[in-house]
Image (cartoon, rainbow, N blue to C red; front, side, top):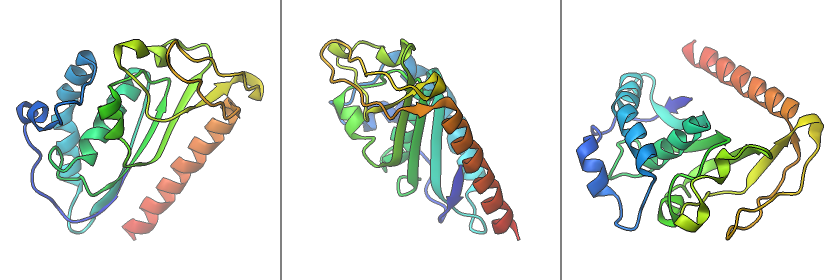
Length: 193
């Protein structure tokens, strides 16, 4: 989702990205490679749609599983002025069943995401990977999704605090997503007139 602000300078090349990160920032190599393969297309898409007549001022990064890892990488990228010409945009981050992407320095770099919501399913192993003892962590507690609205007690991986359970039903999420899509469509329709 994207809306309103003036055009900015072009983003740095993918080769410049690694050098621009603070030295303590570490991310999973596979996620970095996957994101860098998409990064140019993401920045081109934003540049094409970010015009003086229809500027962008907010971006929502959303994904499931590997897509959630890439959404984390994208949000981090878009939040940092050294990496992105859109660093002053409002960045929202919503993930479903996303793995841990980076270390504490990477997570600190996501603190500008508002809102930042992470959903998990109690039986999904992906959010527990890569292992916490290797330095990978999540930025925010998870909202646990359970069938029929039942919330189970969160179970923490070794060395990591237990995740909070919001007790959300899958139907609640479907309704919330439907309402968000309808609101975005109404807003886009109103802006077009």
